[in-house]
Image (tube, rainbow, N blue to C red):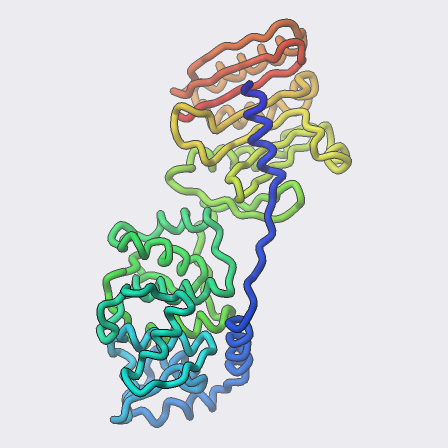
Amino acid sequence: MKRRITAGILAFLFLFTSVSILTGDNAVAAESLVDRLQKITLQMEDEAVKKYTDVGNHWSKKYAAKLIILGIMGGYSDGTLKLDKNVNVDEFLTMTVKALGLNPQAGTGYWAEPYIKAAKEKKLIDEGEFKTYSRAITREEMAKIIVKAALLSDAAPDTNLISYIKTKVKDYSSINDKYKQFVLQGYALGLFGGSNDGKFNPKGVLKRSEASVVELKYIDKKSRVPFKLNPNEVIELSDFYGKKNLLYASPSNMDMFKTITVLNNNTSKSKGYLHVIYNPENNVAAGCFYNSKDTYKQSFESFEMTFAIDMKVTNKTDFPYSITVDSPEQVKKKHRDVIVEVFKNLFAADSNKAILQFDRFTELSLKGGKSVRETYYFNKRKVVFYTVDEALMFEMWVYNK
């Protein structure tokens, strides 16, 4: 029965998971570097770079200085730092392994071998991923390495934020498939960003100056810059337990995002109490209608009506919107004004027709009797109304256009 489907959708909203942060050698080592970083003064920074003849007022001077003090970056024998020089794969791996707080014992052969081995042990790179380590590293390759390092101790970013960022990176399609997720996670974690034109430039090579910024942001979370959100494309909603969650707009959910926004912006039009909730774990939102706020506080399962929105449904064969009216008399008295506003958004010029049928089924459900099921099309959407046998309630399912 469809009633069970709606109940199942709402059940998702009660689920929540706790995220455990990994601890261990990496966390301890990184914390030690953070402690050392906090003790660095401007004078120490100046002392660290003044011996290099080519630094001057380079934009990345302060980042490089800190890494030099921490022993993560060094200069060349000719007395230069070469901040605009390309970074090779072995050099970036060495910097990252050192940023992890590791100091592998030097071997007698290839200078970078101990660091490459450590990178493989920490699963920053895969066996055979690079044919040679002495070539310049690309930005997308950098993204995988630094993100995998960060995820040894950081929680993975919200998948909905990842989906949102995907729509904002203008050259996303040019990123190699095996690096796409890492690039998006890097943006979300604030480890790096793109250029002013919104591009990431995945095939571009990384400069030493850029590497110094990335490594410092990996070590010092406070220096990371959160991805800039469009305030019109994000809304903060809580779950049943009061935990705040962010819901992001994207091309695939824009219709549903607008509906949730309208629902949330019209809570005051309920003469009872309307609580709009969102569970990012299952990507389901809902408007829960109560007789009063006191009723909600006493039992948040005492719904008079629920308006569930399953953000995962993007096809036309299933319905993302399901309205369950459990107390038709109370809905008619207290919550109808909210439904009117939401229907204006969903059905546009057909909103009055939709309201007319909503009111009609409200009256039918009050009378009880045998179940009635009817299908309509409003604003190119399939809409199904369904009363339940002798249950004095009804449901409404709204499909995508």
